[in-house]
Image 1 (cartoon, rainbow, N blue to C red):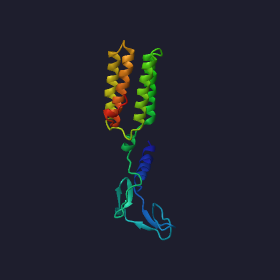
Image 2 (cartoon, helix red, strand yellow):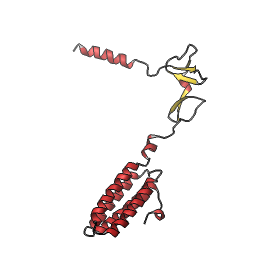
Image 3 (cartoon, rainbow, N blue to C red):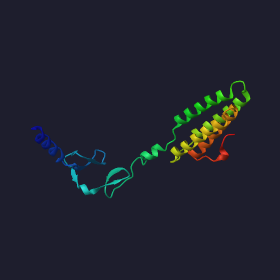
Image 4 (cartoon, rainbow, N blue to C red):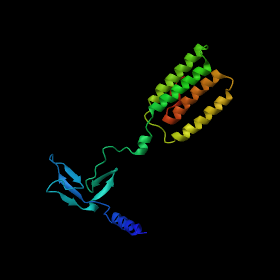
Length: 183
C-alpha cells in the first residue's frame, strides 16, 4: 500500500491551496473602475477582502453597491409563460375535439374551434404564470379525466366540456378573470 501515503500527500496539497484569490482595483482606459483577480496595470491596488459584500447576486465593493443589470432570478425565469407549451396544449385540444365532434357536425365544430382559437390568443397574451402552476395542472388534469368519464358517450358534450376546462385552467394559471373568457 505505497500509494496511500502519496494519495494523502496529494489530497493535503490540494486542500492547502487558498480558497480565495486577491482582488485588484484598476482604472480602465475610459476611466471606469475595474476589479480583477490579476493586476491589470502597474497602478493596480489590492482591495481588502472584507471590502466586498453580496448585493443583488453581484459582488460589488462595499459602499458603492449598485443593483445588478438583471434582477431576475431562476424562480422568476421559471415563472415566465411558456408560449410553446400553450400552443402545443391547444393544438392537441383542437385535434381531440375534432375527433370527438366529427366532421359531419360542421356548425358545432366551427363553434368549438372559434372558442379554442380565442382561448389560445388569450393564453398567449399572458404576462406571468402562477407560482402554483404544478398544483393547478394537477387539479385540472383530474377534472379533464372526470369529464371524459362523465361524457363517455356524449362526444360533442365532452368536446365542449374540455374546451371550457382549458379556459378555466388558463384563468387559474395566468390570473384571467372569468368575464374575459371566450364564449
